[in-house]
Length: 476
Image (cartoon, rainbow, N blue to C red; front, side, top):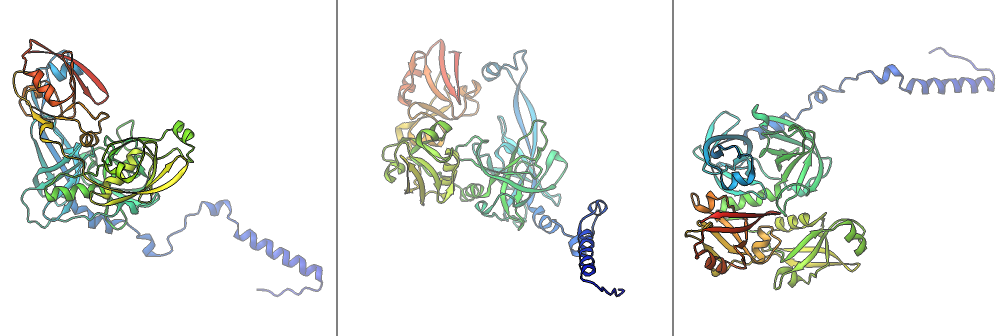
């Protein structure tokens, strides 16, 4: 660098100012620099990849193929729902569907979605294909349509299947990276990457105890039942649904949290039905009007609208009008969020409920107990010359109302329908509430049993299914 001698102070100041300006100019990105592509700083950085995670997880993610024989209708009125349900002449046809699943036990236990293996009448044939191209028959050992979880067991094999472990889904945070592995559109095993977009979504699903992880990792038809993985290669969720107007992925996918899935898997392996804790209270979501009236800081939480006598909530000191804002320190957005937290806590444990009562914040401890069992006289198997032949019915006590998500605590509900029975041919389903027979409003199973013993030429029935009341006439 050439040496420049400065003879005066003014010259020195000018030189220093010019040097600073030149340096600042050289550090300011110019238009050409802004578009310049810079190579990775090292070979290792250039090879950064999710491949190790995928290589570890892929063998435990399977394709699930379901083939079932279902009833279709050959009638000009086949599109009429009431006709299809009660008067259509059935024809047999084959229905095929596919989805994904995750092996969670070395002896061949697979978890998937209930809607993947559900068959509309008849027995489904389930075939599971592994990533290494081996295929096995599978049987359903547990299925819960409300939570959309099913557990299968592979038949055959050496008992040394590759498996994936569950991670605590409560450890997830919005922004965490995740991978989704499944079989979208039947093209074969596919991996997509994204982030956790939101937690504890409750706006979708049928169960009052269902919340979902939202992700922008691409999930498409066929991905249902596949794995949502964290960066350690552990299962944080089971992919179950997408929000889409076209049928394809728009970056809004949902997965069932692993903490709920794990409960079902453990129950299925133990050979028992999952026992949900019974709160002994009716909850509703807090609306904006409620929040204003109760002077709540947020439009969130679950408000207690009813307390059952001698239930866990009553024993804990919970009162109607209380607003549950958190369970064991986890904030809840609504009634579903509260019930989900209680469900994953498990029967036999205690939970801390943060509640707001008349402007005061309280913390109460509640013992999580199973729902009260139905009594011997609460359940009947109906048979005879009447529309409910083959139906197993029950009085709707508080525990059953809570389990089936019913708004009533008295009446009669159909628990199951025997294959080939009159009740099945008429289209009655588990969960249907028998409201009225003729002019008699049905109060309990004893009353229903007495009424159907009197043979009638024309049965006039009122059946509640979900939010709909069906008025039917059936010939005797």
